[in-house]
Image (cartoon, rainbow, N blue to C red; front, side, top):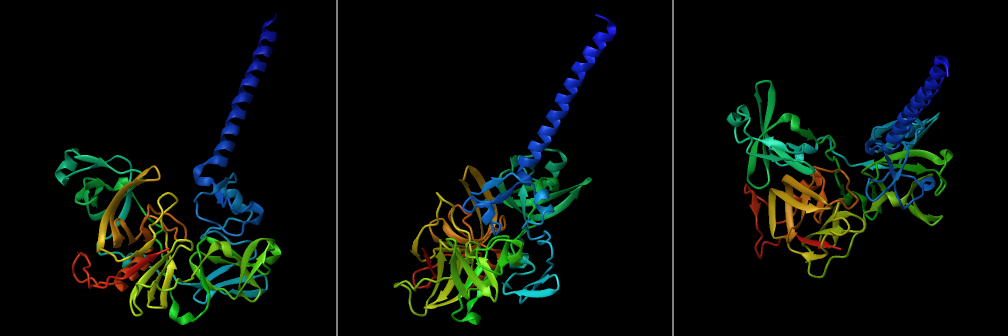
Length: 421
């Protein structure tokens, strides 16, 4: 066989080898883009994709193998900071969400009850951050200089409270608290701050009389001109997370319940939590304060006797770690406390959890700085509230706190009842 023939044969195999490499790279990239954890779009397993009309939190959901970029491109990506469906422009206003569709102006009958700065409602000195895995912790600045950590901390659901910062050489270090009495210095490079601290604020009910109210808990909820008809022609606007609406009519269409919130404005009821109220428990006096926690609706309601006065979304215990049911008198009220445990195959270590009101053993109300998913079960059993709402309930409930860090109600203090059902 000639050298030319050998060369041709070698070139043929080289071409095959290069083709295999190129095909492998293409396949790997396609696989990575379709299954990357950061690029997944989640839809509820309870509702087929063609019926989808809102975006739920990533909780027990199926994964649709479609990248975020693809969804953004076709205008269906329903995120708070994403462009709306083509033809709409959004302006958040106090009286609702204003939409401009072509030449006609539509004002969606929804109202916001949000705050600008949730940090104002956390205890003084609160500066929370998440700590990276196996971060070296130093007793002092001297041990920082000598590179002699006394322990390693962080990873998973580990959050710390930063109390002080100092520059050592060309690096910044934070003095942190965690646990009960644990503290030390860490590198600032080992923390990440929460840019999504919840701005949720509940609704004062006195202004609404007997109106039936509900609050959106999905990121964005579509508003339709007709119930049950999911196409571009019926889409008249969208409502953002934690806006609340008044239900003027309900109708079952195709086995789903739809709410009319205004003239020619319908929403799928699956994506709101209804502010419905229980009757006063018999043990609670006619003029006594009590707090209701509705596990089905994921709401917390402040009552005085037979009158509900304030309602908001909450997050209670997940499946397998459900919040305890019953009627309770709280036993401890404290400005903040460390919480540790192991749930959902995850160790959590949360520094200085704010505005805590224990009502049965380790079950209690408290503020939450590590998630913003109210309206769906998220906790290991406690009743999670936003920074504002936890502060509101803490100050409203009895006994009233003075300058002390904590108080243990005694018999006769009339500690505010808690009714979980």
